[in-house]
Amino acid sequence: MLQVKNLKKQFNSGEEVITPVHDVSFKLATGAFAAIIGKSGSGKSTLLSLLGALDRPTSGSIEVDDVDIAKLSDAKLTAYRRADIGFVFQQYNLVPNLTALENVMLPMEFAGLPKQQRLDRAQKLLEQVGLDALKQGRCPTRLSGGEQQRVAIARALANKPKLILADEPTGNLDTQTGEHIFRLLHSLTRTENVTIITVTHDLLIAGKTDKTFRLNDGALKEER
Image (cartoon, rainbow, N blue to C red; front, side, top):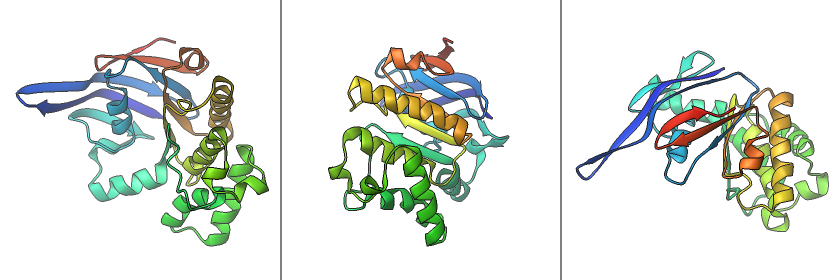
């Protein structure tokens, strides 16, 4: 369960106080797939950074399974990001000189998992997102954009996170491939029992999620 209560983020810009996230509250059950839509500059990226523990809120709480991550120490916050949060980006952010398999194994190496366990889970995840053994052995430059995003999704799942945050995950993909990626993300909420929140400009795809929120001038409204 993800529960956000009265979340606010402010910072100073010269003499002006900017509030990109203002009194945001919402709740998502484990395994839900939600989209956040809104204009550029509406606060979407700031909200995602707060949910991903990349930044601390000015006030309010972010509770994941009854743990308020906004109150964790820096050390515990780092451990939380490593174990409980997965990130998927528009630019994929894969390590170019590693194979798809090695990219997915990398987060598990940082987490201290034994090599055989890393290998077995990486292979399973890549098969789950539709990459066969041949493509698992290729570096990112030898994969299509859609295949690279599948690797990025598998990597985000590597440490069995509670929450995956996807920032415009289909922004660099054609319409058909983008729809495949969203269907894949939706199915993973069920098979991996993970909550996924995505920021997207694609209103058609956003409409296929379990919940859609619109962020406008830092304020969040549930649309469906």
